[in-house]
Length: 316
Ligand SMILES: *[C@@H]1O[C@H](CO)[C@@H](O)[C@H](O)[C@H]1NC(C)=O
Ligand SMILES: *[C@@H]1O[C@H](CO)[C@@H](O)[C@H](O)[C@H]1NC(C)=O
Image 1 (cartoon, rainbow, N blue to C red):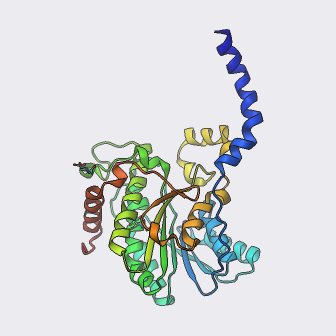
Image 2 (cartoon, rainbow, N blue to C red; image 1 turned 90 degrees about the horizontal axis):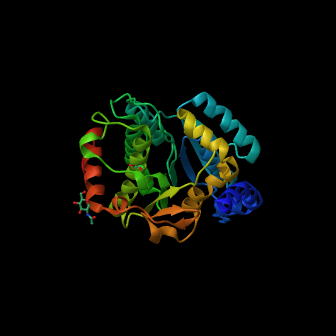
């Protein structure tokens, strides 16, 4: 009893002393690639804050032309200016993309395809987390609609350009949270039951399943795909949950900065020779374990077909 009490009293102290070490451990995984990207074109979704912004900044620093695809294009313009000033790269462009509206996605893709000859790097980074039950413009549940279907459609529309620009890469920002996810084919839009946390996990599982299915389908095309867990990162993702915002505050010391959170996306986008690991999931710049659901090819195929169906796309 006394021992336990003592332990409880000591714990904060031990944590305090060990914090720098723990923090360093949690921040492990740095993209050390020195590759430069002059003449390369990249699109980053959700690039006006957090990890997306840091990812875009790094790509700009390496000389790529970077499109910031943002829901709030005015904010995007400001961020584009900021990155231009910081990196000296003027080719940072903000474009409107609202992933919760297939019309907006189609409009973005149409303009992009007309404007650009190439696309070498697509980073599907934008996402919503734990929002109250809501639907997208097309009637999809928001997590499933934005995190999964929105990026599915975007990737689909840009795929030909990616193929023509090969070697090219698609990086999907997923999450460790996928371990709690399950694809409920009879309840994809949360109409039978809904939990905002689980809806998030499910959509992140969908990201991983898609990465694998896409990798299978793209074999030999020169386009490779990766999904990443960025780590636990300070970002606006938690804006919808008071509880999560408190947790984030409480543990802020152990949480990665957006810049550290961007490292695994960058690692997958840039590291030479990574092609043989297409379809894999990465965390801290290493291949990471995924749940058994996330490895199930039957589920991946079915989800692919259902998604095509929902979006009115041809199945192949
Ligand atoms: C990324 O996720 C989206 C949505 O789940 C999917 O459509 C797309 O194929 C995925 N791409 C990659 C490279 O994983
Ligand atoms: C994949 O999922 C299906 C449907 O849930 C299940 O019937 C099947 O046994 C799973 N396959 C593997 C290899 O786990």
